[in-house]
Length: 515
Image (tube, rainbow, N blue to C red; front, side, top):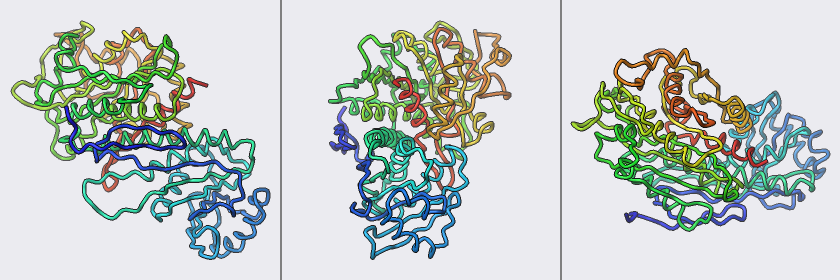
């Protein structure tokens, strides 16, 4: 299928050149990140950012005396106290840097607090419209390598734009120079900048796919996007299964979701081959319901426009694969994205219908709006053929998760203690946190059906847990975790839009596997 309005884009990131096709709506901004131990007064830049606890006289003493002298009097004039989240933006036309941004970090006690302040500073940098930035953490006890990765990711996130109309926009910075005191760690910090930039680029791809309207981002669009992403990229290949392929595989649960839609279903495979040939892969399964009307169990009209975000699990898997290409992590990862549309029609699956999944287990569909688990269960059965070391599914699965955990953390359920702990740690380090819920047999009993092996819902109580219990029935022979991102995949209200989560969590987990 030809792609209208196709453009050949080149993504240049810290020495990595990655070429692939994009539609014009899918655009990744260019940004270069450099670690440096050079004299900051000799580096040309439009703005310098100084993270400080409020005592620059002491903090800059060991860093650069000339810089300290220039800023001490200026700092006094600003009444900057260095408290957490306090910023002062100053124009300094007589100095080498034309602008300075002081960012307070005193009182921050954990990594999440630091990440929040970094995000605040990145947002402000982009708003003021500077081209080149010097980023300096003045604190004596900072972790420059970890912070560099977060800075690069958050600068990409802050530079994200999605518009389908022409307006005047502030241009994102083209270069960020991250200053370190110790020349011996420049190479390490550069590596962290590269990784963080790869994560940020992947995050933005996930956000842009999520923000696309459902009349554009169909299952066929996602399949074509995956093919374009893999074209000409040696570590990545794509395989697309159509409806007939899924019929032959007996993916009846998945196909039951798409029965009422005119949009053809697609099952997307993306194989990232960064490890050795026989190394077992990590499999990521991303739910991609490109629009979820609820089917016959029709959703209320209020807020239904946000159901275009029901493919954010699949978008996050796309984002991770994009970040893997840029970071070149040495492991094998397979992304599986079941892509469907859930619509009501005369051919749609009805409440009370009984379907047979690919595994042979039968399912009574009591609610057609509990459709995500139906496309995921066949995907879990399908992935066993790859003999994966780990399987993680990512899905905007239950409104109950939003009620339980809000918009701050993703829900995590797993049949493996070690895997669950690794994911929790990875999320905390990346500022993309998750919270574990129980996966006990007490909840599994709620799925009992009089007419099939199981029902697709377990009643009003513990909806997030019973949904995971349903999936666990198809993951008995694999190390498996489920991330419910219904609360974290997008924001509503004035900030409405996809977040790109949990790309940072997943990328940090994958990197930890290579260490």
